[in-house]
Image 1 (cartoon, rainbow, N blue to C red):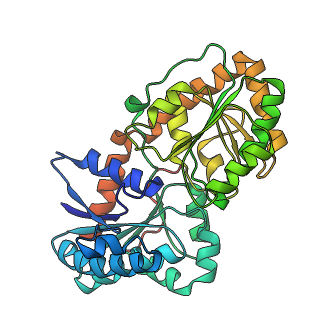
Image 2: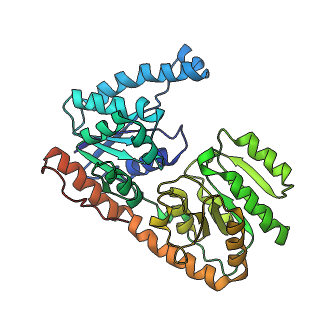
Image 3: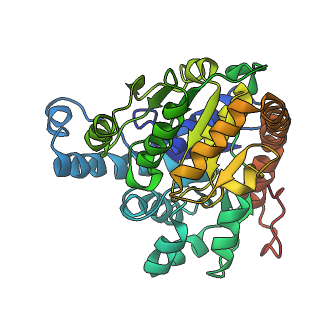
Length: 366
């Protein structure tokens, strides 16, 4: 079966690109599936490559390359697997892919990943129509499945995958105050809350460290906040390639994230697979993969005091930390490729040989 995977390439370091890359690697040499990437961000050549440094010119140039690329690559596919985010990204990437797939008579599996789905679908009748137009909608969490159901859109749940071997689980007998965050510097991820929580941790542990992996529009604001809070031992390491990210989890003992909006963050699964104790806000789909007091500790969105208190509790109680990290590592079995592969294969096959409307989601709910 030939699968055209329409998604960002790793030139855009984010959850969708990383997950698409993992799927492509997993399907490589698989006897049942031939999959290839159709990048939503194709690289221009010559003069256009220099022109894309200009913001709006970059968008126009990308679209000029993207539509012909879709026409060529979708034509030879049996199934078009389209990764989707929300808002403007939906118009620029998944919408053209769905239109061309339908034009060529190809079935579409629309794989929606955005934690902003509720607002996006409420605002956009076109997005709702496109999702209903797809042969199958697949989301990575029960949270998004419930959001879709609120708009009478059916969706199946297939979890994101994590390569546990890549992240090299390590048991920490006693946690050090070495904290890691790997969320991009965008408003919805509220990394400022992470910094404010770390201020309270550093008041108790002056040698505590915080490593920030990522980048984004709030980079300068966050650096200014570090100075304003008089924080020490904070490292901004920028964006890190997926093949290298494991090193940062290996060096940390506590993973902290404080988003206000989220879906099924790969970063939490990566922390689970590495043996880091996790503290997170309960945004969006996070509680679907992290049960409070079982796999990690949850706090309300925006509550930096509670986040700091949870970190201090983990540092003071290695028994609790050990129990949480062991359960978190065990939960990674649900996200293993051997589990997820059969679910994707069933979805692909159902679009090639339609079985009629899906009365209930058939994939495993997490």
